Amino acid sequence: MAIYEEQFKYFLKEKRLKYTKERKKIIKAITVIQKHFAAEDIHQQIRKQKSRVSLATVYRTIPLLIDSGLITETLYRGEKVVYEKIYNKPHHDHMVCLSCGKIIEFSNENVEKLQEDICHKHFFIPVEHYLEIKGYCQECRDKLKSKTKNELNS
Amino acid sequence: MAIYEEQFKYFLKEKRLKYTKERKKIIKAITVIQKHFAAEDIHQQIRKQKSRVSLATVYRTIPLLIDSGLITETLYRGEKVVYEKIYNKPHHDHMVCLSCGKIIEFSNENVEKLQEDICHKHFFIPVEHYLEIKGYCQECRDKLKSKTKNELNS
DNA sequence: ATGTAATTGATTATCATTCTCAATTATATT
DNA sequence: AATATAATTGAGAATGATAATCAATTACAT
Image 1 (cartoon, chains in turn red, blue, green, orange):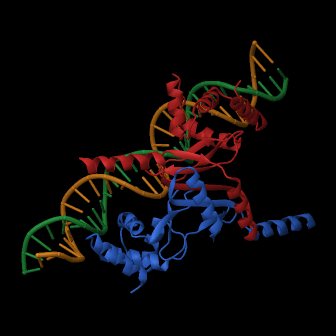
Image 2 (cartoon, chains in turn red, brown, yellow, cyan):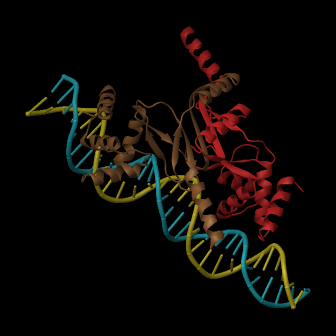
């Protein structure tokens, strides 16, 4: 059994909650999804697997997935809440390209340390943090550059 | 005339947009509001001043305020979008107390530098960034401490 | 003073998320 | 295996922030 399923099952048992077929489908869908995802994406993924679970149940299951330490909310801009898997994955932050929407994950020890220092200075005990950098990725800048060049030549 | 009003007026003129009474009321409300605010708060503030502007107009005006560099979106968690004034204010980040909701603003040059380095390494041109640290402020920890003590004594 | 495009308020629409509730089901206990 | 029971589900309705629509109004360049 996949590690995600195992972990979730264990969490549910501990909380005396039931391991239902629906929850099984949801955890399997999440195991397959690689990138950042919204509630709707889980629902779709299950559909792709020729199965179904109501969207309400997906929404109801998300808090359980968060509490069990399998996923976390991330990237708060915009309409819908986006999640990502975090089980057995070290903390990281995000760069988001304003042009193509690409998400680059990065982690930097110095940023973490610096934040701890700052919190200490403010007598603040950090629990979690989100750092998001918006800007333009190389690919998009290259595209723009070659586009401009072509326009000049035409 | 207040600097905010001046600035907004100038921005509108440049864009050949109109400086209406409604926009005047909105910019005046924002001048008064000190903390982070949502669209609804602007609406309320105008009410407090015994005046009114439709909520629709408030929502319509917000993008103009952002484009004119007077306010920015911030702190994306939760239901509604929250803004804050940024005109003539240096960039800063936020700590949010999970217990009382207090927002502590801080700015740190090293964080900024570090982020630039990281972006450079990833061939990424940063435009803006958001750093939010969630945790517990001293006040809330003190309260908890004295509460626990009292409970032990009772 | 006038023409016109921008703006407004009122209302409706949208869309993600949550809630409700009757019907179903997982699981502990007998 | 049968039972009891609390948890869970699906369907649909409710919510709540924000956006869109549209006819009536208004700011402002000429």
